[in-house]
Image 1: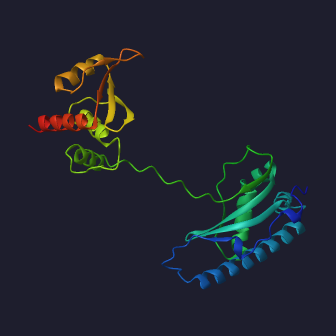
Image 2: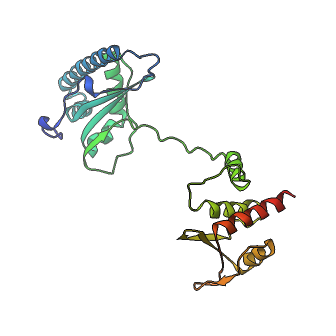
Image 3: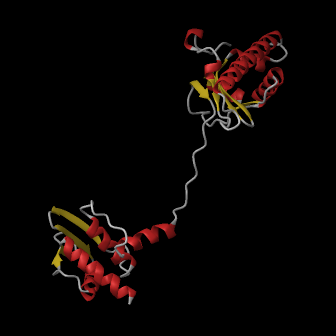
Length: 256
């Protein structure tokens, strides 16, 4: 019935294993927090030992609880404002399934009553993934995705196009500014790409479809078109100064 590893491999539950998640503005005294963690560890350890003895005495009438406590090890606790979550080591998948069934619910309720603390078993999705050595513990929630601030992005891009924001230390700044102007002011959205040659004068080449190439020529791009060696693309090679002049032309014509 005993499924756990040898006790030498299991770390005793002490105050160091109590992880504090309560707000600092209400519990700002580290000494008081340390004392509280010691009290929690001692209380939960005592309650755990009591429940284990009780389950051993009732192993014939309640074999599931006896088997659970015999094969369960407490190695941590996360203290939250709404209660504490147990961090448990489970030796096998069968015990882990027992922990997340009605037996585990009865165990958490009895431990909370004995310790006079709100104690819960962590929600865990590790069942059926491993056969031995499962650690069931509280996992911090992943932060939700923050929606991009499109208005702020548009304002920054417009500031770059209009020259109000200057990236002087960026060798690709002139080409990037031109690409923004083509996308936001000339309506060429995603159809134009760029490659940089690392030349002292900049030397960026805009690549686009023949249709977008004709549009660039209508806008007055200061370069002759060249055919790509890879597919039906048209390229225009510009210096930094060419990019600056062409961007100013697009910006002024769009503002008119």
